[in-house]
Image (cartoon, rainbow, N blue to C red; front, top):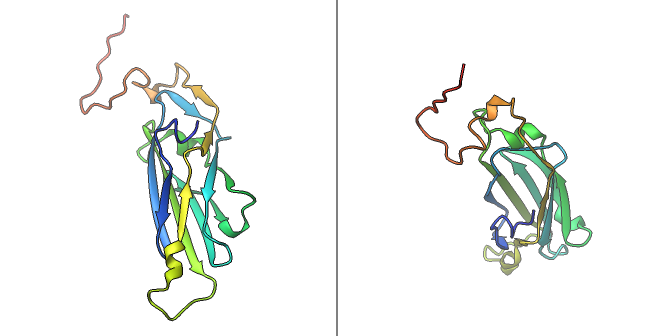
Length: 168
């Protein structure tokens, strides 16, 4: 699934030193995501001759990987995402409605300057393109998995309990 399919447009993270950007991706309710999920980010990065840059990726608060942007081969980086529990459950153990993808980029100038308004910082950026891809193999929750109830039958988490009547 591309970022464009998830309604995430190309975006740029700008700024000196450490910057963080979070994306809230809607997870299809009733789908159980497996342990083989990967994220391929298609990036535009600053000049590696000016900056030492790193990118740290976390999913639902769990670190998935860290990459030196200076050593990218091409413009793509592939990151294996955390195991299925981080993808399928929120912190309270309920089926996760969203996946929170957090990107932290850190830029360091290779040759520091005493100038507090160093114009090189204007070129400190990381662009994530909308053709980035999240790869996963979804599996529907088994009917016996009552922990997923009332999903996928309900797309709204209600404050009131759900009452079901079953024949005896």
